[in-house]
Image (cartoon, rainbow, N blue to C red; front, side, top):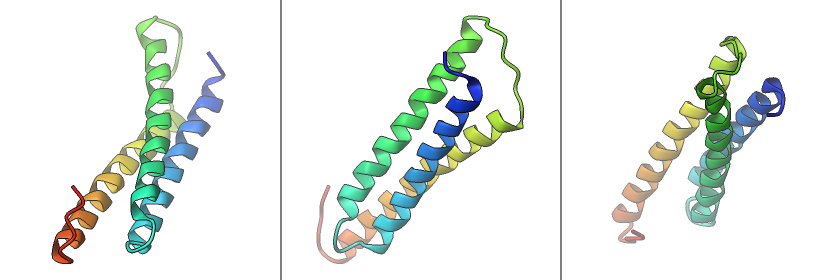
Length: 103
């Protein structure tokens, strides 16, 4: 497994990408929101895969200490999940209000 610090930085980076793309999708509702949210979901999935890789370390009983960096990375990922859900829901509401039902 790569060094823990590298994986955590990747997790934080992908989570940040997800958040930025969500905000951008919200701001460009008319233009490219769907494609931006698709990219946001991909970034979140990358962060979740790295998280799963880190958690598998615990399962294999490898030595790993929980520290503030681990907690921060997990917090960033969880907030990205929340923002993605909120933005998707908000855009659905706006679609319905505008008479555009995109699923």
